[in-house]
Image (cartoon, rainbow, N blue to C red; front, side, top):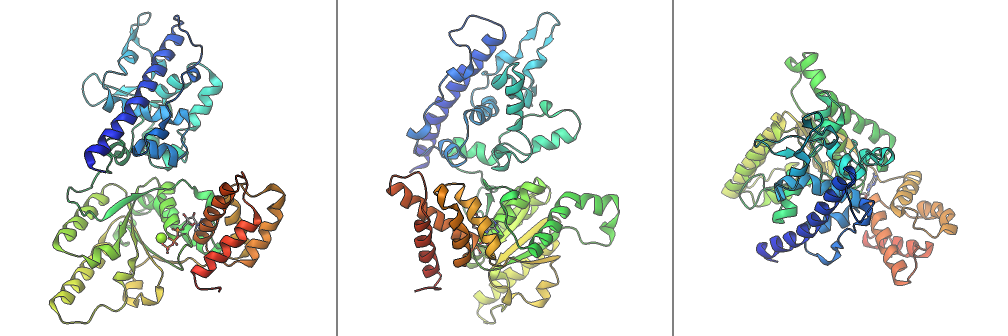
Length: 455
Ligand SMILES: Nc1ncnc2c1ncn2[C@@H]1O[C@H](COP(=O)(O)OP(=O)(O)OP(=O)(O)O)[C@@H](O)[C@H]1O
Ligand SMILES: [Mg+2]
């Protein structure tokens, strides 16, 4: 699809959605002022069917994150100032009795004079009016760790504003830059304008409670969370910046599918930081001056943004530096040395992931504060992984058999999700709402074969 066509499909989709939001807003205001209207509840205004917008980034996100009507309206509210600047004007009117804006409508002053930026209070007003039960329900949609925040669409800064004092209701709701641009232009913002920018924001629908780790691994990961949350205290308030090198460098190693990428992503959620994934194999293999500039730029930006940098497939950095004497080899060794230095000097959190710890040389290992092994899950952990991955879709009378599956098949978390996908397809094919034990068994055998562990 050309980028013009992509923008056109985004526009078609957003137009429908924002029209719906505008109707909801108008109805809410009428209901609030007890004006004549044909409806008595905003739920009576049907939300648009987004399934027709197959290419639109917004429709895809709604589908992917299974967003409810309330969550969709919150996103539209937050996007409204950018999409239709005068749409929220009605919320600006003053209450004639006290000659002040209606505090019920919330809102904070925007950067341009006179613009209205919706706050959490505005969302409560639009979605709940003065219905207390609905207000409580809606406010949970914007809590720390709620799906809208953890999938990254609503900027997590909302809670930082709250910490600066004042209730959450006063915090502005802002759509994360990445998603704002994705929904409109169809492209995530490049942190740099060149085409081969090496980093990508990563997010997940899962949350910390889903992470199934061996005890030792979990303990080590907890240290990273502590650092993420308290680095400032340790370095600045305690004055340890004189002795400790700033930042934190961790290496995650272990077999494929054991949760390294997931853990890095969830660390971002825990520490309220965005996580950028840099695919090192791509960077190093086509390492050219341009990429070096981009990386430099990335490090600079990341430094003051509290980002976590996640270098995936980091093997390229380790072990035998090529000993060739061609100018290419020398060039690539220099680049690697430069990258290592840059990683070492970075004042934020850097995580590297690899499948092959054997290659990590000692000199390199010394520069890491944590080296965390992600083993394959044991039987108990596999059972937990099956349970959350299946999300109660296993034929109810067969749930006992899950223990047996967990015991028999030595699969990683990643392989388990593959089996669940396969089994779900089998269920759909059978026109059943439930996955059968037998489908899991078949899928598990297929996975083991893929790994060459079973013939
Ligand atoms: N320890 C775990 N806890 C919970 N879910 C897991 C775990 N390990 C894997 N999964 C599931 O498998 C998926 C893939 O895992 P992930 O991508 O984190 O593995 P990885 O270790 O990064 O693998 P690779 O080395 O191939 O990059 C996750 O998104 C999650 O659904
Ligand atoms: Mg990974």
